[in-house]
Image (cartoon, rainbow, N blue to C red):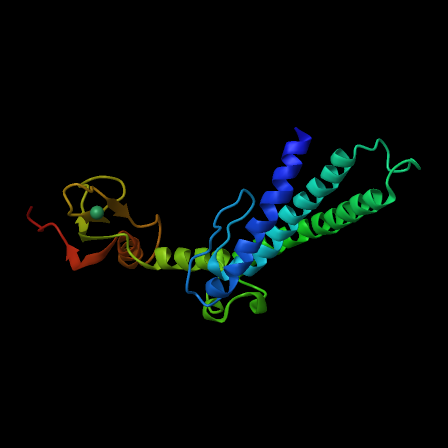
Length: 223
Ligand SMILES: [Zn+2]
């Protein structure tokens, strides 16, 4: 089983990595999509293709080198690298495979963190293809969407400001914003005790809709 996995890693991963590196120039120029997009630990976008590829190469190259070491060990069938009966060339070859694996896997984690930084902030710039350098990472993009959402009203329902008169009620007259959309039913009230009641209420209504009627609808004195 170990033998099969090792053989697959050694034979399969290097050609796969080569195919990914060959796609780099076209992805860098923006001429094609990234051939890898989502791995378990991180996404790879065209703007973060180079950094993603470095991390993927370290991980997969490390696995392939481990596989190579195990394969040498399995094929030559020696028990223990320290025994004097072992073919010295094979021991050296295995040691080289494992040393390469150790180097690549030691680099893999920092490179993975670098990829997270690239996706979040689109930095460092020199790893970003020029045409994507002015883009924000997902952190900046999220902040932009939040600002946009906060500044835009959610609907274009017609909202009217109405003065309600509860008659002999304890609070006296007060203003209500009423949404005229029949399927909506949104209503708003000014904050309690606020001095500029109408302004306060209009600000709330403006967050519900871009269409708030001017003026206040007041009940007629004789009504
Ligand atoms: Zn509404």
